[in-house]
Image (cartoon, rainbow, N blue to C red; front, side):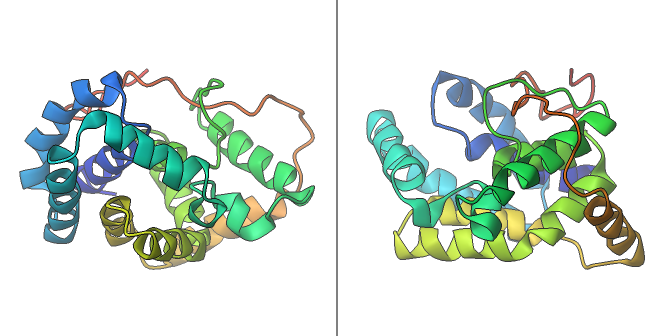
Length: 209
């Protein structure tokens, strides 16, 4: 994975978080890197930021809650699309968590491991091959999320467009990693359903933890 793909995914991950002060602090980094990103990513993120800039931050926060927290049809949790609210979803979420832990990607309790932002950040600064495998495996879920956001006329659809533009074709290496993930089955450790710290530097993509 190239540094530009990693930067694209990290920018999208940050923009898909709740629009609070932390995001406002990161916006200069995001804006600085966008001109260097691939055209499809750059155009999509610029479209989102155009909407973001002309919307009051309080309204943006209300819109975020209305779209992601109140509308199950726009769930950012990838296993929701594959497992719904069934018991199997717990196993699927833990599968994400263990994939992160195997590669030293420390997570805390800020968000569930299957949140698209978490997966994107892992793919950007954790293990790129496993991240690619997880994203490709859930390509349909990401596409369904994008379609839901379009139906809701949400500017966040542009961020998901940027994500889709980073997804690789299914190479033999990715296929093998997906098969390996599938073979592991339900995890045996009942670790907590945690997420990651939010102190990454988009400009450097290094010294992340």
